Length: 142
Image 1 (cartoon, rainbow, N blue to C red):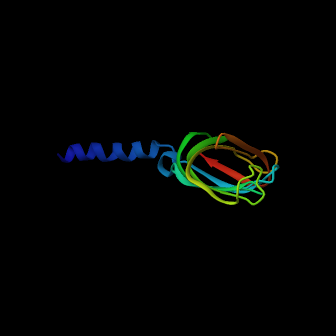
Image 2 (image 1 turned 45 degrees about the vertical axis):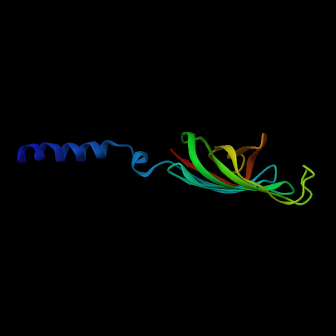
Image 3 (image 1 turned 135 degrees about the vertical axis):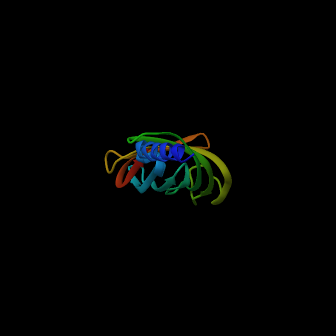
C-alpha cells in the first residue's frame, strides 16, 4: 500500500502542475466605461456568473445577472443571463418611465481593449445596442 501512495502522490502533483492557470482560476470578464453611442457600462464576471450593467441615456437602464459564458478567448467573449429594465423618461418607445420588466433574457458580446478597440454589443428585447469604447477598458481572461 505504501508503494502505491508513493506512486499516486507524485502523479497528482505533476498532473495538477500541468493544468493551465485558467483551469485553476476560471474565466473572467471585467471592465467598464463608455462607448461611442453614449452608453455607459460595467462588467464583473467570474467563472461564468456575475453582473453586467448598462446605462443608455434617454433610453433605458439594464441591470443584469450573468448566468453563463457562451464563448471566450483572450480577445472576445459572449455571455448571457437575465436582466431588469428601467425605461428613461422621454424614451424613444413612447412608454412611461420606470420599470419595464425583470428576468428578461439578454446576450452580450465584448471585445477586449480600451478606447478605439474595446467593444460592447448588448442584444435584448430584439434590439441591438453596440458601441466602441471611448473611455475605459475591457479585460478578458479565458
